[in-house]
Amino acid sequence: MLRVIDAINEKVGFYTSFLLVAMTFMITYEVVARRFFNSPTSWAWSISTQLECIIAALAGGYCLLHHAHVRMDAIYSRVSERSRVIIDVATFVLVLLVLGVMLWRTSEMGLLSFSLLEHDVRGFRPYIWHLKLIIIPGGVLLFLLQEIAEFTRSLQFLLRKRHQ
Image (tube, rainbow, N blue to C red; front, side, top):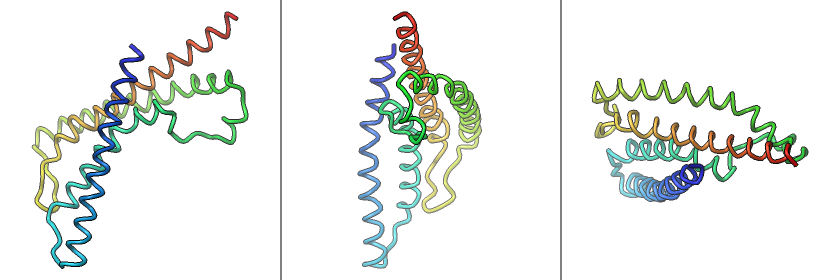
């Protein structure tokens, strides 16, 4: 099961990275159109904001999989591997609580947004309920699943060391 969670977050992170390239080209197009041709687009700001939201929401699990989140390296790098794992296990409860609340609240927000068929108030006013109903809670869920996978690995490590 841990490999399945890892594989899902790996694929989601890989494909999400292409959105960053698309967003870069789109913003570049917007800047050139606005600055050189005095012809700003009505869609670039709204779409780039949505892409940024998608990237941020879906990158959490991928970053955790690759240990790319910020840590207190001043402490973390000076302790043994066993101590690092104990720190990870201890922080799991806090992370689980935060991600659990985020999943609950973003799901509520998504359902409300869907019921209103919410759309952006800027530019050409694209719908944004799909971000709030699917993408954001989905990203939090992937992050939560990856955190559970990392916690499971940490427990396995501690149990192996304990029996040696």
